[in-house]
Image (cartoon, rainbow, N blue to C red; front, top):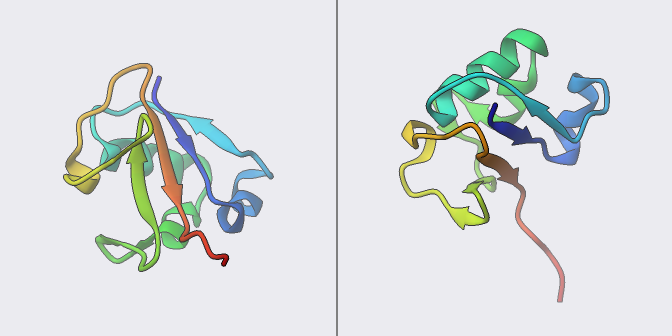
Length: 87
């Protein structure tokens, strides 16, 4: 099953888990399945039907230009990454 990695701000809604496996053929379907298991996770990652400002979807270590409609496979790793600050 695809694995969705959560940013630290969303982990408390998933019993502290860093990643959750869930069924789905697209990022949206995986996110919907995770939301069924852990209500509230979607709201931490999404603003309505858009990815929250400042978060980026990374699929298998590559930026995801198609966003939620990106197709995934059994071994796909999905990351919702916050911006990296520093200097």
